[in-house]
Picture 1 (cartoon, rainbow, N blue to C red):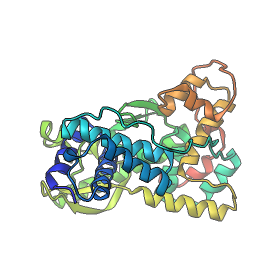
Picture 2: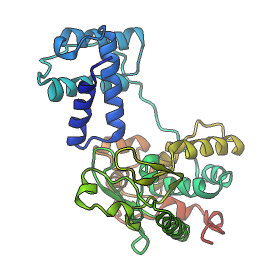
Picture 3: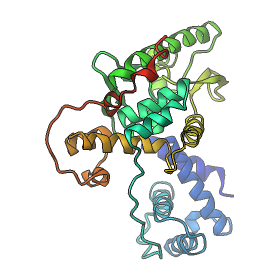
Length: 331
């Protein structure tokens, strides 16, 4: 295994550059695998030839996908550049399969309804937001109370993919249910504070800059987890946000119960949001901004519809007649 100092330095450099926790976990995993593959030798004693041998092993022996190989290479390039202090001169060509071009799975509005009808409570609300706003699952579950603007009908997504903020639409029909969810969060937070808890994790260095912010309502998760845990560094009694697996399991079960044979996941709701907006005449650039795509060519996956203009966007969740699914959720 690599020396703890190596991984500690790797994590410190990743956090310094504001990489996401998931990237930190992934890069650390690749460095561990690389060191094991090289017989537990330190990366400082290795170079381009050893990196290429590792990547070739992943491509040929393990037959990993091109996107996975790209992540492994990125992790090792970062390791040598920022931790070892010796940027790799060039790894050279690595045998890899060309990434297959797969069109996204998209549900019809009726299929979306059938799936949502099989869901209940918090997971249904989360799924409605995925379809109604085009968020990724983790973006939805890491929303804070302050990120919801019920008056303007907007959701502000912080530090999304690519470390960029963006704004997307909050469906009108979901607004009352979201408001009720925030009130439940308010009541839960008050009980937590009375029990000497009420803290949440803050991004970056905000905890040092604003020591009490982590116990304030605006920073609470919109979808908090049920259990409280004690942070091992600070001792604060915190809540995490709802885990992705809870919504993923509910979605998988709902798809099964609905009888839909498409391979639909939570991300399928994001694909459906984009496709239905474009089918409704939304401008491709507007959809690109709502989805947070860096390049419009990624957005073009969803359709060959020409840019028709029109800056106003109404969520497909509002057009799909899902209002009856909200009944009772605002109580």
